[in-house]
Picture (cartoon, rainbow over the protein chains, first blue to last red):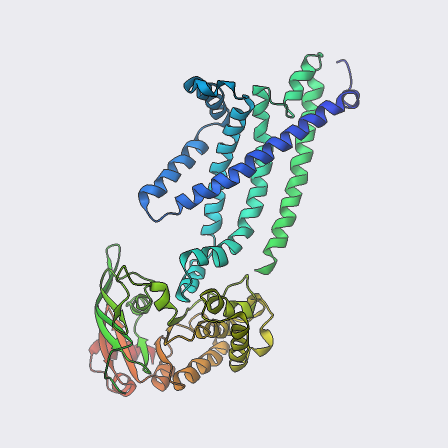
Length: 221
Length: 247
């Protein structure tokens, strides 16, 4: 059995902390960049032109319909292979690219359904007053859609915290990667349980935060 | 009724299909300035669709909608500019829940550059006072009853100082005790000379306020005339049948 759980935790806590920091950081970057990209995809998806809109639908379907790990492999190995000029770029960016693109597809759907959740009568009332399509979107639809979008983005961040565990496969220093480090010190079962505990604590804490935000945002209904 | 000059709103051969369903089968009608026109008829007969075509919330499948002679369905038309002249009140109120009562009213006049914030505020308070909501300016709509929400929706449309008001079953979603207050507001408006087109199930109200009644059934205007002609001496058997059921 070797060392106990707490023994390992006390001895190697800086490693776990650094891993946790990496996890939170990579998830945050992926969701933030993914949100910007996802918003653009959502706008394209909402286009009235079918050809344009279906472009976004294909993007979303491909990224949501294939495993993130597969996307990471493609990004990590095939992009540098296909475009040799990109070989000099740190491989960490390829992993981040996959995470970001993956997140953008989910965010695009979050934004689209957030906008779709606003009653159609709201847009009709705004347009009947003579507001333009853009004014209607920014003044009437989005302020109401935000109530649904923000909590869902929080949940996407929580999901992404778990998804980044795959990045350890590509030597990104995040929580799951600490397992690899400590395995070199012949520690196997303790780090795994500690990592699971940290993931659980973080996601529960953030879920509680999201619930609180949901409650606060729903006040004006 | 002076029916000379250009009609305020005119439809020519208006049709509307939803998929395979023919909702409007060719409606040609003229509404002149100062007229109060009620639109009655059975559910699904096309009366709401007709009304929603007048400001192009529904795009007609064929035919024309003219506002003071300008064709709204023309691509080059600045539709938003015309919609500012056409106020609309919905069955479900559609007040903006995220804005205070006063901001519901001032949003459009300020945003479209029709008036300054100060002017819009002053006008909004005056209008709220008129409909008995003077003390609600700083509330959010969730604090209002259905009847109060509908009065707010009317005021919101009036704030754009429109040339005509369209009412789409304005009391159908209200509790019975709220109906009277809303109808009173519409009646006052009609009596003040505002051009009104009112889709309604309130036959007593239609008889009282309108100068003309359209009976729409099966996607066409089956009969039109003064309230006396329609309610007391309907000629079309379908009108007779409908009135027998609702009166």
